[in-house]
Length: 437
Image (cartoon, rainbow, N blue to C red):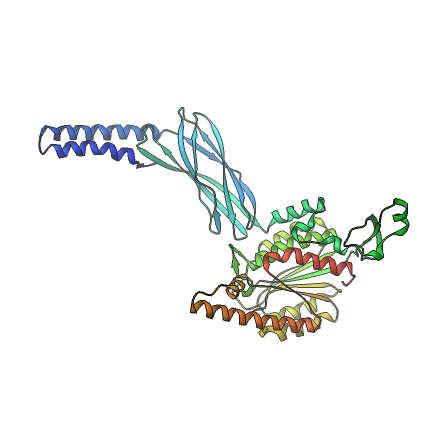
């Protein structure tokens, strides 16, 4: 362990210094200063030697699963194998793209004791990372020195899309409270073809679906709940190009799209639908085709975890042509991308028109949050005025392109990335309920 002196040691060193200065008046004090100095260094060496025999062991799990953008806990077990109380401070070696939001951990460990401390980390990139070491610093018996050491823990951390959000959705589903995520599933019930069940009438229900016989018998309004169609095909084309690199709070636009895609996949499998995913930038990065069943969520998770945005311009013509050849059965084709202005308008319009001859296309545009903030900023300077004007002009051209797409009856959803989940699932349930797929 490496020693480093503390304040008290320097205070004691003032004693021989004062004696040495006094030696200019009384020469005998110089000898006293030398003796005190030797005594201090002997005591200091003894303090370091005895404290260096302290043995601290650290243990942690071998593998942890984290959710991107969430605060995740890492418990660390500390074992004091010495026979006296040890005050110490502990830190972790934090990988790149991790934020350590733990407060400094100080504790006083009793002799031959074991304690567990918890570190709080927030990852901002998906992938596999190594936490290699735990660092600790103890205070020596006299309090004159700190001794620093480290222990290898070699913990693997797998950062996945936001599994916490998926688990939260599953809990809300069990409690019938999906509205907390902005999902209004009840709004689309009653629009299928086959009757699934009866339930009490709610204020958002269509009065045409009231079962008058059951209502008369139970003396309260009862409505029919229709079963949505199953065995639909859904193809999701997710853009991994430059426009998906915009970041806020450490998460880029692609991260938000992937988090929403994970929840949509679970719902689609629950509904009995078949899902395909195509990731693209200037070329096709990868694909999953015709997967079905709730157990397939692991396959989806592994696939989308590997996706990262690339600083290249996406080739939209290529992906439109690819999907036109690849997707044979009628499907709901969902595009997750962005559009800064009307430069790509004709490409989008022509590509969607070709696909719409056979498929139902849902075009989702994820707005750049930072650009929105620039456009809405309070102006305090000339530079701020120019940047706000440029941002507003870009949004104006973008809105004009979206209006043109909607004029050609293209289903366009224009949302902020962090608001995507609720609106995407709402739109999916609406299209299913109306038998549009």
